[in-house]
View 1: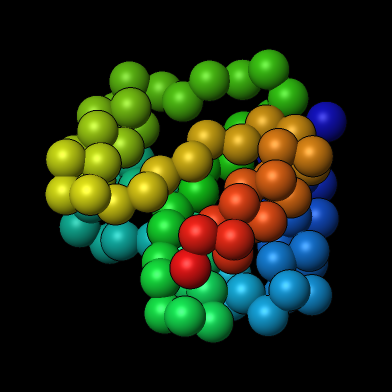
View 2: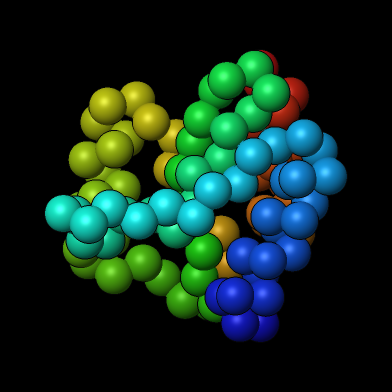
Length: 94
């Protein structure tokens, strides 16, 4: 399945659960994750969407690692079911 289809469906699911889903870009930093999700509790996390079976690039992996070193949750999602589980899991932890 294409990345944009997965991203769209997961973001719609997130919104149905009252989770904000912002497209994230950083003009001065490449390889940042695709989306910033904000839970009703204020907790935030990033998600990198990939087409089914695809993996992050090396620059993306480095950026994910940098974020994780600062205790930021970063997910890499390549299926709709994984994306929905991510949303449900994060909602359950807040």
